[in-house]
Image (cartoon, rainbow, N blue to C red):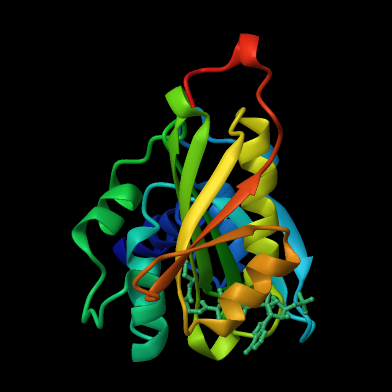
Length: 221
Ligand SMILES: CC(C)(COP(=O)(O)OP(=O)(O)OC[C@H]1O[C@@H](n2cnc3c(N)ncnc32)[C@H](O)[C@@H]1OP(=O)(O)O)[C@@H](O)C(=O)NCCC(=O)NCCS
């Protein structure tokens, strides 16, 4: 067999074994990634925002940190302050740690993912809660990308968190909201949270009782 023919044959075989990369929808890429141990797959959920955008809500997985950092770059200064009580330039290390050392028992982080025009997943919002199982309580923080506010993402993430906490036996959910944060206070009121005003008037502690612990089953809260 002439040498050129041999070369073409090999090239064709290589092409068969390694097909040219094509633009697969982002959801397919996710399917190809192995799921981490104990990943709560049943908590994944699709929903449509008020603007008609299809969004996936799901617990975080390894590798989501870069999407969070990219989202953070698109959050306005005042929204960063409302979330972290400070004008931060980058995500705080304890927040990054929650994404890097995933512990599905003690940290509950749910993200909202949209799809860009180039079929990439992008993070639009996140709700995170630290669970204190011994007190049957959890402390949460919520952030929606500034250009995505008002589309229903904040409410969906909160409702998802409330449901997931209830599922894990969490009886009380609490957080801190700045007094001037009217959108968040409105959302909290609509979801049935109680308000505890601080004496210095800077922030409000919000609390939601998911269920009453009967005294016999109380875990010390
Ligand atoms: C607060 C925040 C999470 C709300 O998220 P969102 O996606 O914009 O809220 P939604 O579109 O889901 O709206 C939920 C409710 O909040 C209320 N709301 C939202 N924006 C509002 C605004 N600008 N003014 C008054 N109420 C508002 C609405 O009443 C809405 O009620 P509905 O569900 O019956 O329509 C978002 O503004 C945000 O990320 N802010 C910066 C970070 C922050 O404040 N985090 C909270 C600290 S823990």
